[in-house]
Image 1 (cartoon, protein in one colour):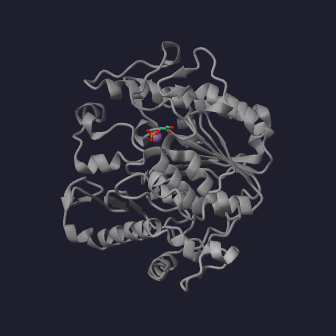
Image 2 (cartoon, rainbow, N blue to C red; image 1 turned 90 degrees about the vertical axis):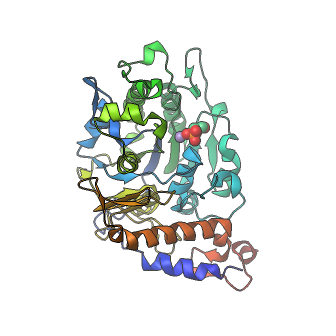
Image 3 (cartoon, helix red, strand yellow; image 1 turned 60 degrees about the horizontal axis):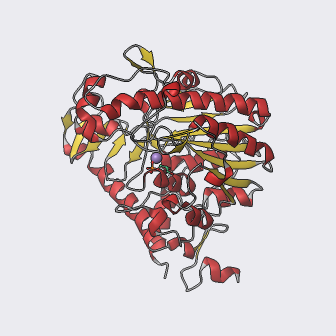
Length: 420
Ligand code: GP9
Ligand code: MN
């Protein structure tokens, strides 16, 4: 009957922090473009592989005056992979533990990012050149009130423009900009890339660097597809500038989840020149986050520990949209009060000083196991937060929450019954 929501609400309100007043509304009424960077892990950023730069364009952005680059940013995804990352950035909740929330809870009530933007005059969409029902996207997007899904049928795939899972990212981005030119503004669109996906195959003409030389073909090819992704983003920025849409937009790009699993630890260890301990594996769950605000001149590298649940409040605040009544578990990354804390879906977590993995508390500076007690208070909170997220989703608790007023509807009313 919604009474579980009382405790969840108390937790959310107790952890709520104020936005940074200097940045609140800095991107008001601008288009918001999200780019989901398929399988892109942070270890390739500002790195070389056998003397070859892997992500030259993104590397420039890490130093760009209009770009915030978050270098200690973690994904929160579980079995739902890309779809989990979509769920997380839309709702600032975690996916569910044992499956993909896009399949298990697509009938729920949500107070999504898209819904908030709709309410603030935005046209909202997702662009992804795959079958619309993959990951149950068509159904879930309706539940999250995304107004349009530009799926594979919105793209023309010419001879030579598909590889691996489908349409190559470069033509995908080119055609996506053409769609953007037709959209009512301001718009929010989430572009989901595809080429840098396991098993990381490319046509010869798209290989801009050589393969790596480990015993893992997967890791060897990953550097090449990551390099291709970098090129595709460069093309996207160029096209967007030509179209005129760029000047009135902000661009938020994030890695969706890891690309290289633990099955490739030996090869990873060869590349990184160190053993892949549980500590290192947790650190490999970092994905890049870029927030690009054209002509702002305020960009810099941000080193706070953060994760995907933080994107929703951060971007809404940049757009000047209040989230103080929202049932969200992330926090504004620009708030002076943002806490260094990232919770992974499997219960691992990272703080300013510690990494907790394989039931071991690691000292972050040394990577050595330390006293478990140091991690204990955080471990409780990590479990609690994941539990609250699960409760909200499994109990479909947002039915009982009026996000306009912050009122809990615990007496038999629901969001739907109220509107009738
Ligand atoms: C499929 C794409 C890849 O449409 O988003 O999904 P993933 O396997 O990464 O979850
Ligand atoms: Mn993915």
